[in-house]
Length: 178
Image (cartoon, rainbow, N blue to C red; front, side, top):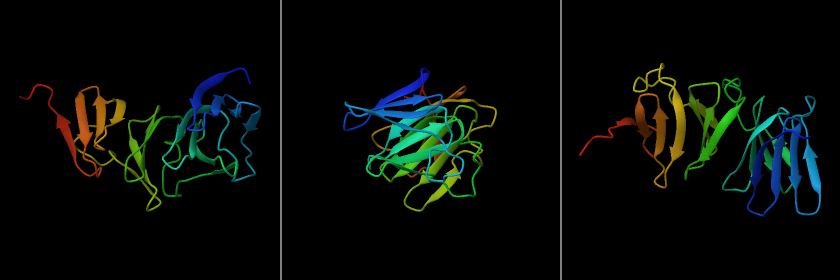
């Protein structure tokens, strides 16, 4: 595939190339290629790879036009991490994945103004800001940042907000406070 959308290097130095037609991995000697197979639940979900992220367990999260898959590089198998009670449309075209110290994965989609959290410890997924009255729906979320204290910072069209490390309480950050 000549169209490469994203390049990532894992902790072993393997190079991952997300293309419009799957995922290619170069180990320094040869390439392995992965494609979607709609009849196989253990294949990658979707073909157009837009995001690659390595978590603290060295699993590779792959974001595509159809959703999220997780590659275990030791077994070369994919899984689909989310329960059936979520909006799968949100998980297509993810532009950012982050992991906090409690093994909660935070997702931002390029098409949605919502932030979703997958709690790996409880195998649950929920929308972080869907029912929050503190971030008005008309604000556009530009970016997310997780700092070393596990505070989730949210850059919006109307300033900066942050969630506490437990992702329970949201506050607006006042840039001009003393």
